[in-house]
Image (tube, rainbow, N blue to C red; front, side, top):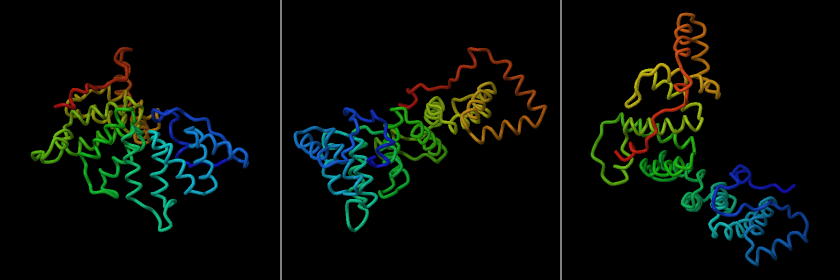
Length: 280
């Protein structure tokens, strides 16, 4: 079986607007020749399969030759692969090329690939390989978050919350003003991440309801609901808290009493997620 780049195998089939190609295994000279003929005539899927084939043979230069043709036609997945090839030093005898890796990562992000957007956001937010620029990082997290990427939603919540706790100074530009932190914005993205079924977001949301945070009022019913939801989804912190509560009968009875008060309508898993707060 032909090996393909590990990252390619993990990407969603419909990660971009290009047609999904059926993987072909070019194992024989004849099959390789057929793919070369089709690719030379503009067949994008043949070009992608040739790239995969040469990659599997560790002929990274030839793989790049065909991947580049595919990426130039708007395939964000392949642009992301090329970025990884540069970052891992597969295309330069002198080692990794972070500049080219960054350029191809930007290309994949601009073409709409959420994984590329999150990786680019990480770089800007942490100053990894680029000058630190948190608002720029938040911009790219937001692009992925709006596509439903739960980790990006959670990262935005954390950054908005951290900024809201700082002494605020006047923003220097539109980007800084757009991403100035408030608890309402942090809560919005925390809610979105929790609704996207991210366990750590669900646990943090339960804690926010436990004490109240900004526009999230103290609400023991919702605290219990989200705590159980987080535990069911694998949050070790939530599981540990429920275990701790179960060992204290008085607290357990109180929790059970609150849980029993919940009606079907109240047990709906919800939280404030009005996007209007992002414009405040």
